[in-house]
Image (cartoon, rainbow over all chains, first blue to last red):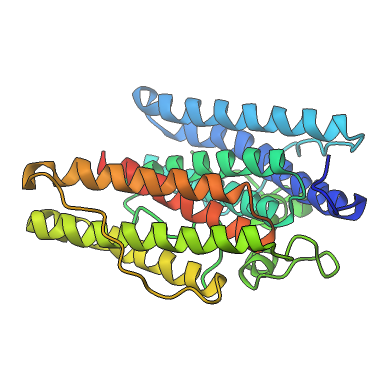
Length: 155
Length: 161
C-alpha cells in the first residue's frame, strides 16, 4: 500500500521504474553468461554467484509486478554487447557495465518509489550491485574501484 | 571469443542502458521526477530532521578518515580516494539538506595505529547502515541520494576488508 497521501499515480510511476529495473536485471542475467564464458574455468565462481543474485532479484521483481497486475517485461532473446568481450579483462569490464546499469535502475526506483517496502528492495539491490562492481572494477584494472555515488550521474 | 553480433534494435544499450542513461538519471540528480509535483519531493518535518541527522553521520565519517590517517600515516595515503569520496558524499548531502551547517562531531580515535584500519572500516559500515535505514524513510531524490551513498560506502567497506 502506498504511503499515506500518495495515490495510484505515484504507484504507477513506481511500477514504471520497477519495469526498467526488471529490464536491467534481465540484461544482467544474460550478460553474465557472456562474462562467465570469457573467464577461465577457475574464475567463473564469482560470475556464477553474481548471475544467481541477479536471477533472484529478477524473480522478486516479476512476483511483485505480477501481484500488482502489471505485466512483467520478458527478457530479450539477445542483447548487443557494448564492446567485444575477448579476454577476462573485457569480461570484468562488461560485468562492471552490467552492475552499473542495474545500480542506475535501482537508484531510479528509489527516486520514484511510493512504498517503503519498494525502497527496502531497491537499496538492497543497489548495494549488492555496487559491492559486486567494486570487485569487477578491481579485476578490470579500473581506478578508482569505488564510487561515491553509485547509480547517480555526476553533477 | 568473437563479439556477438548486435541484434539490432533490441540492443543492449537500448535495454539495459536505458535505465543507466544520463538522460534518465539526470532527473534524479536534479531532484525532479517524471510525476507531477510530487508527493515524493514533499518533505515532512520529521524527514527534514532525519536528513540533517544524516549530514551529521557523514560529518562524523569524514572526521573518522582524518583520525585514522593521523593514527596511521600509511593508511592515510591508501585511503585518500575513499576519504575524498566520503567528502563528496557529504557535500551532496549538505546540498540536499538546506540549513545544514558544519558541526563538530568526533568519531573518537583509533585505539592504536595497528587498529586504525578495522576501526575505520567499522565507522564506514556504521555510516552505510545509518544511511540505508534513513533511505527507506525518505522519498524522491532524498531517498535516491541516501541509498546511493549507502551503497557507495558498502563498496568502501569491502575495500577496507
